[in-house]
Image (cartoon, rainbow, N blue to C red):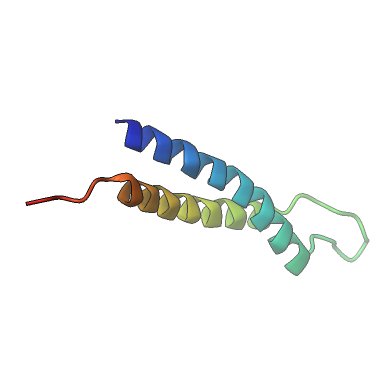
Amino acid sequence: MRIYLTSLLLSLIIMLSSTVVNYNIIDCLDPPVPSDGHHYMPNENIANSLFLSFVLGAVVFISAVRIQRQPYRK
């Protein structure tokens, strides 16, 4: 049980930090400035960064469980 809780905590930390990093990268690549020059909150950039961080969090969770799990011995 401790393996899964540790992996969950690690993946949540990675998801939170990667959401911020992904949003900043996506925001620089696709800036949300219309023709009048006002900034707005880009829902598409937020959705993309959340999706990418969810995928990265799942990969980190699975990897952390596999690393921590003891190998099966015959």
